[in-house]
Amino acid sequence: MKNKSWIIILIMGIALSISIGYSIVVSQKSKQGESTVTTTSIIEMRATTVTIKNTLAATGNVEYKAKKTQENKEEQNLDGENQVAEEQNVQTENIEEKTFQITLSVEDKDLKKVKKDQDVEVTIKNENETLNYQSKVIRVNENANNKSTIDIEISNPDEKLKENMQANCKVIVEKAENVVALPVEAIQKNEQNEEYVDVIQEDGTTKEVKIKTGISDDYYVEITQGLTVGERVQIVKSSTTVVEKTN
Image (tube, rainbow, N blue to C red; front, side):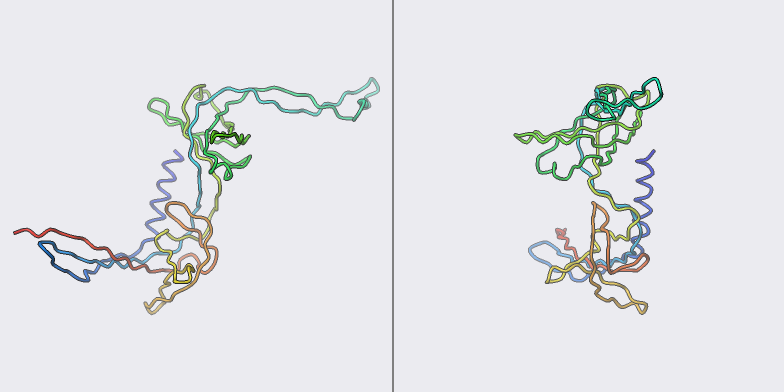
């Protein structure tokens, strides 16, 4: 259900972002039986508000593992007062409980992105049903020979979750919620490698505006400075197509 909702949000976001798009044939050349057509596309986009997530994908099998926790324990004497332990007033007792966990293998180059308590989205295909669970990173295990692993724990298990199920997991390594954003293709760079967009003015002309960006995913880039929601930007794209002539 969550995957369907995300697809709907994505489609709505793209629909809001792209408001006008049209193409102009610029030139046509002929050479040795081929026709080359260069087309320029002018696209208008709007800054919108989205949630951007960067994830690290990995797979693993569901296991039912023991989880050791510590519980503070206070003993009382007959008078109802706390009994003082030899070294400290509060004793700790190791308690062992079992939880659903998954061990994920990750490459060493990606391990630095992962931290304890990061959220993890877990998807399991069970026959004709897709199960979705939330999880958290509980351990990061750095090993030699590029065989590092991370352990995650399912925080909302149900009766459908069983051992040895294969799980597709996405560790959310960074996330920005409800931020001003533009589609990736709208961001341009000048000769000084500074990022900018061509903002459309009220009279229809464009003005180059420098921006600062935050995180990005495959679709959107976070705009941290220089643009507000609803502002229109323009991007000009050129493409060349080679078509063989027919007699």
